[in-house]
Length: 115
Image (tube, rainbow, N blue to C red):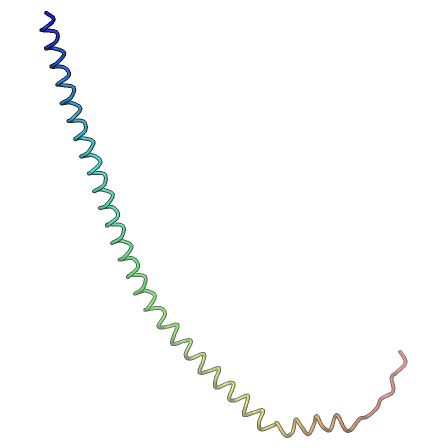
């Protein structure tokens, strides 16, 4: 009977070791599958991010071009106005100097009024 119990115990221990090996393999498989799933998700996210960045760059380039044209036109307009102001200044420069000198040299004193 003791030999039979010993053999039964040994069979149970063997079965437990075998079950432990199966559980360990399942854990390894699960861990491997989780890593693979994480890597797949990361790759999908990277691909999605890349496509959205390209889409944004395309959108930005299409809309920036219109802004660039408007900016160039505004710069040209500003340059034209500056030239116009400079020309007007040159035309009336001598007259302004004469008036300033006249105001400085022809002093007309005025008595302060009693308030």
